[in-house]
Length: 264
Length: 299
Ligand SMILES: Nc1ncnc2c1ncn2[C@@H]1O[C@H](COP(=O)(O)OP(=O)(O)O)[C@@H](O)[C@H]1O
Ligand SMILES: [Mg+2]
Image (cartoon, rainbow over all chains, first blue to last red; front, side):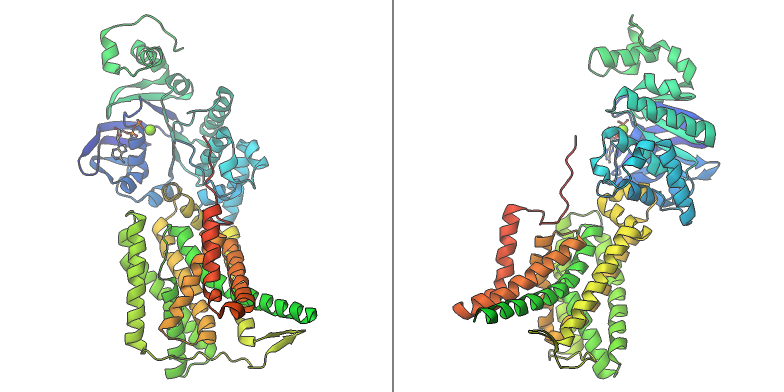
């Protein structure tokens, strides 16, 4: 189990972004972290993967544990060795490397070449379209293919836990469907633990087992995905976001109940 | 008369190709650093000079055979590369590129100065154990020293090309060059690869120092071959080994043609600046160089 206990994160020594976040991702489950832009979701993932340190961010309180072992003092490549890998938002492929080479780079933490080969075949089994493009520069793939590639590349490290940052952003519904079904299969078949950050709550709650809602650096709501799907506050929060086009605080929406329900 | 012209051209061309390969070797050192760390190494010529000194002094004073003094130069330059990365460049990671550039300019001056302090200002020789008799290939005479130099360059350019395309470490280095942050997220120890890039540049500079030192003699002036790196990489692209080869060949050939065809009319000098004129022209037409990667634009 991956657990954050009361984590506080500060950037540049002064900017307090996470204000005591506690959450856990059960082994072999999909846990989703929802919230509007700027809530602190990406920061949460970086606190886990150790990449905060590359942006002058720091865990100043609390800790991050994987099966009881502390992660928050490790450097990013050591976190990957422990089996936790982060997939950035925005489909950050290695543009100048081919699809094959992207996957090889993803397997950097593994020493056995045969494992790398086998991992590659497994990724190509999950995303057959990548196999057709294997010797193409990743920069020239479509958005959906790039998203598949960054997920496949992360899987090359043979992780126990994968941290996915807004994988659906900007993709067509059919592509999202395909990617999410692969994620679900990985969870079912390989007992992969998934922490899925999304702004698209409807989508995320469909495949997640458990969910958290973050706002302004704090967890404001949590529960089984089923329960969150039914939660009227969530519906209204995301409704407000959708209809008015401007962001509305989860707390604000609590005060004036709205009528329409779309999230089911 | 026309037949003589034809032979003359052929001589200039072969000479240009051999010299060009040796330029490419030096440019390779520059490209390795740029690829891995985005830093422009203005001390590349000084690396070459320093390596030349190491080899020359080892042979002269310690009486080492050529191959051993060359190995010593390689070892010394690897150590220097690692050391400089550790002491000078690592603290600059994350700073603006200009900071790194200025540091390498400072490094160049320091290396030139310490070389004189340590090894003296006189010109030393590196003697390659090959015959002085030129190798005759039809109308073209090939000095064995140049042949060896071109051969060594070719072998190492091929080796490094293979390394970057096929080996896992080479692919990881390209991943680091592509995006340091993403490389880190994939479990790549980015700093280790920065150090490796400087060490590899050290190896290449050592080979360049031996090859060029044999031809030109070793003193402070040897660092000036480093200046040729700029037209070479601008013509070929800062981050491409293939580009370094092609850029090197173009510079070598243009230089020789300028020396053969233009210098007699203007009384000399064009050989030295012709590659730079070409460089400026290319900069105006295709700023990323002829073979450099273009940013892939995608929304
Ligand atoms: N490197 C950084 N330095 C300073 N502030 C940052 C940095 N990264 C993110 N922030 C701030 O932290 C807050 C949360 O950002 P982020 O974690 O990216 O949110 P989300 O992923 O939920 O959109 C934002 O206000 C953002 O401006
Ligand atoms: Mg984010």
